[in-house]
Length: 323
Image (cartoon, rainbow, N blue to C red):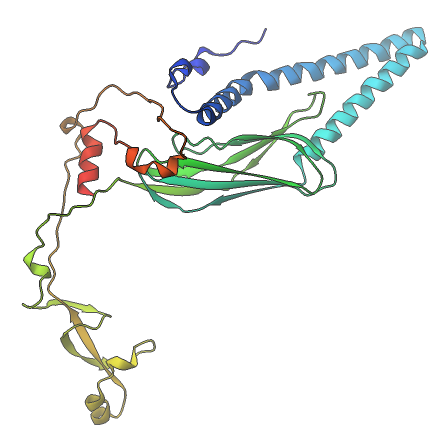
């Protein structure tokens, strides 16, 4: 008897406590079901295929011993079933093109990350069903999908919008494509190992009342650092290099040296500000870890940026203030 490990049911949230719209609830349930079915579906299909093999072998042996035409016909039927099922599953898995388009590879906490997936059937044979399972590490990024009845030379596209809640560097991919025949005898899978990364920057706030350091005010000594920008501080001259602007050519020096000479400039007075937050684990406090679902209204998540709140931890507040 098939048994599902207890750890499968230990999800980080309670289904009955979800207070979200039907759309987000559907995405969570679909991803939860996909994780559970990984344990049972493949074993059931394997047992089903073994049963068909045993029945075909038993019918063949019985036909050889008794000479019954019915048993031989049953053997041919079961053998044909195995051949057709394997061919069907193999065709479903091949001649499939999967593309993933990420709108941006850098975003910020509280802003959306948009991805577009496209599954294209490049053959004339329809695909009964295709399961696209994404192993992205981005939290609450439910991009897995089941594509049904994909006709020949057709494509199916879906879009995923995820509200970024945690800063960090996350991996998008790899993707696993699964399928089977109509009888569920030969489950097959194919991995797309291509991966990309997305960087989620901390949440920032506009500081309107902050005294500018004296170093960035005009006047004073120049910072002894060469720059490609034209400033009021000329540092010297040098030979012309390809790519230099003609406005930087110093014509008196060019006429005197009989070759093109350009001016070099130095930066205006600047002041470097270093903010060093204390990220020691003993310096921060946080409540018990809890993954509450985001309360969404009828508006899409990317239109509710003002309603996003940082986790109640001193670490996240420190990073947001420093950023």
